[in-house]
Structures are given as structure tokens and as C-alpha cells.
Image (tube, rainbow, N blue to C red; front, side, top):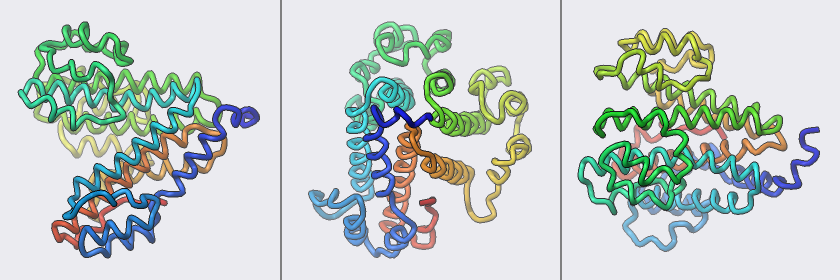
Length: 345
């Protein structure tokens, strides 16, 4: 029943996203990529995939950064095209996806400003999907109040800033706290939106994906807070108020002081049991990405759902990381590590 009217507004877009998903690199295509001897060979192999001639206007010699930049540009173009075709609920959903990149851009701009980096250099590093008109003006802010009142009050991030206005001086630690506080408010708002506004099965799939995102952030915050002045209560305030680790796991994570104690808390969740298993050379980050890709792959098994857009974006970002890793290994002649990529399609 949930699919009865879905195609009126979203049928074309779902078909488009599934077409993009079918263009994701397969395991056999990755095997061809890892056998390349140089970056020109890699360019030739990629030209026979969905990437086509995206590097045709790039002069030799090729560099890894150019390959990453051009493949990312392709993703941003496709995302913006989908958004231009969206209406009402889907437009709001895609706005929410952009907010996460906006938060990263705000943190990047403030960090660059306090370290007196060149503004044009910082703006080049900002994520295109998180761009907003007043972003360049962030470089004039000297404290959190002026940052909010002169720049951010007219952006979609304004509601998320209400818990940050008590922050002290803008230093590296406080900027990271602001970033995580913003992300907590953003994830909770996105979770509420998916729970209340999205139809079945979109809401069920998105809640699973956001629960993983919240747990990943909580684990990373606990790990990165070692040897800092952040108290257990402060840590608890940075954890999103949902997820498989919420609420008891959060309380335990906020008290942890070493990796072993975090490991015990995380392994109490069956799905996360292998996160700290590095026997096959995988890092914690690799395990995060692996589980995320499996969740995204499962999202495509349902019909009549806009959650495939989130799943496709995350899958495409992982694919770009894979291509960049393979290109870097080829450029640095590190063929023994070239197979450390993550592919589930």
C-alpha cells in the first residue's frame, strides 16, 4: 500500500538512483584496477566503467588528487541533478543530507581562520555539498557569539547552534566540541524527521542507517577524548540520544579511559562484535566502512523508498575512497597494500 502513490513524485528519481547504483564498481572491475601498473592504465580501466571519459581533458602526468577531485565532481553533479528534480519531502530529505557537510565546512573554516590560513585555500577544501552563501564570511568571526549573530543565524544550521553559544574561546578543542555538538543536534533532528515524516519503508531503513551513524560518532568521540580535559558529563552531552548504544552504552563509554574498556562496551552489541578485531589487518575505521556499506547495500533491496539516495551517496563516497587508495598504492608502488579496499557490490 505504501507504494501506491510513491511514483507520482519520486518514481523517476528512484529509477535514476538505482541506475546510478548499477554503475557502482563491481568486484571484477576492482580486480582490473588493482592490476594496473601506472595511473594512465588506471584511467584506461576507469573509462570502460560508468566513469567514462571523466579524465579525458586532464593532461599527463596524472596525479591521485586529480583522480579524486574529478570522480568527486561527478558525484556532486549527480547529487545536484537529483535534487533539482525533487519536490517537497524529498527536497527536505536531501537538505538534511547536506547539513552534515555544512557542519564540517563550518568547523574547517573556523579552524583555518584561527590558524591564520589563507581564506581561498580553506574555501577550496570545503565540501561542495555543504556550501552556503555566507560560508566565506566565517573567516571574520572571532568568537562564537559573533559567528552566530553575523553569519550562521540565516543558515539552516542556526537551530543547532543553541547549545554551542556557551562555548569559550575558539581553540582547537572547543571547535571540535562545537562540531560534535552541532552534529549531535543535527542527527537527532534528522532522526526525528525520518521517524515522523517519511513513509514506510523509507523511515525504517533510514533509522537503521542513522542509528549506525550515531553509534559510530559516539565510539569515535570516546576514543578521541583520551588525554583531554573533557569530563564524562561533557562526553555524554556530545553523544546523540539514540542508537544501539543508547542509553546504557553511552553512560559506560563516557566513563572509559582506555581502548580495552571501550572495546568491552562496544562488543556488547552483537553487530559491533568484530569492530576491534585487527587480525586481518583491518582498522576500526575499516570495520565502520564495511558495516556501513552492508547496510547501504541492504537499503537497495526495498522498493518505493527514498532511503536509496542516502545509500547511494555513501556507497559512491566509499567507491571514491577505494579508487583514491588504489591510485595512491600504484603511484607509490605499494602493491602489497593495494587490496585494502572495501567493496560489497
